[in-house]
Length: 136
Image (cartoon, rainbow, N blue to C red; front, side):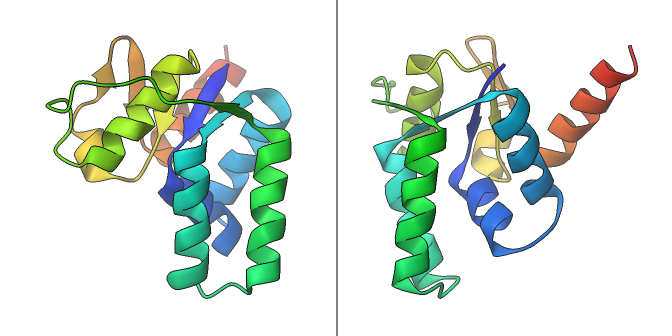
């Protein structure tokens, strides 16, 4: 399955051990992670300015993400779709990358629930979906 991990999920995955880190690992081993330059830029900024990870480590993380993910150019999205223009970039990444889900903790995205057959779900919802598929 093709998945877009929103910036906040990627940050949480690298900032500590928890659900987002587990989801990142599952997506890495069993799915295709789709990402854009916009997401990489946001990850770089947040890891540096909010989490205070050393610059060399941030460069390594960005390099790692660039190596393991499929990088796409976000498809232009109607500006009225989301009130936050950065969220339009996330949706545009998903549509151009033919991803099935956006996994996010961003309320502004989550209230949409979907966009053109793309599910917009929380990390917990994705985890439960994976568990349901395993039990079938």
